[in-house]
Length: 249
Image 1: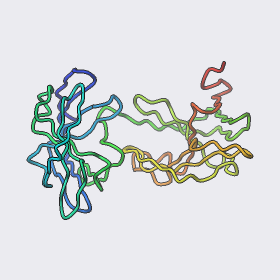
Image 2: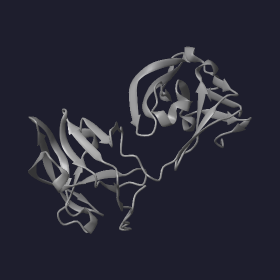
Image 3: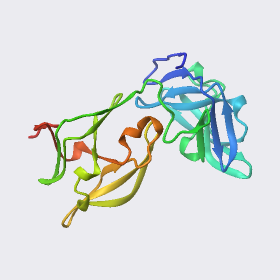
C-alpha cells in the first residue's frame, strides 16, 4: 500500500507511492523512479507524477502552458530521448498552489510507448491502490435483450465487482447469441483486467456498436473472466432473476 499526503483543494488528491515505476519511449527509458507520486486529477483513477531528478529524458520547454483551476499553470515540454520525441508530453508545475507538485514532472500516459510497475507492464492508467476487484461465480439468471431480441440467456454468470463501478455480468460464450455479434476494431486497456476486444450487435439492418466486450487473455488477477462476454447494461434491457436491472419508463 502507500503512505499518503492528501490535499483537498478542488478534487485533487496527492499521495506518495512505493512502487518502482518506469516510462519508456521507443524502447528508451524516459523515467525510472521508486518515488512516484499518485495524483487524482479526476475521481476515477490517479496519474503518475515523477520526481524531476528521476527523469532521464531531455525536457525541452515549448513556451506553452496549460492551466488547471486546482493545479495552476503548467509548462509544456517536449520529451526527447534516443532520437525519439514526444511533443508536449511533459508538464511541469513550477508555481502550483499544491506544494506537493513542486519538483515533479507529469508525463502524458498515452505519449509513452510503455509503462511498468515494478517489472510488469501496466495499461490504460496507473493502478489505484484503493480499487478492489471481486470476481465471483453465480447462479443468477441473466437475460439480455436488445430491441426486444433475446441476445443472451445464462444461469452461469461470473460477476465482476469493481470499486466505484456497477457490477458487470460476464457470461459464457455458449449462453450468448454469437450469430448476432460482429467483431469490432475497437479495443480498450485496463490495468486490472488487460486488453478488451469489442463486438457490435447486428439485428437486421440495425447495428448497435461497441455494446459487447470480453478479455480473451486477461491479466492473472482477472483470469476468471477469460473468454467470457459482458454487455453494456446501461444501453440494453437486462433482467436478473426476472427483475429489470434498470427501471423502465
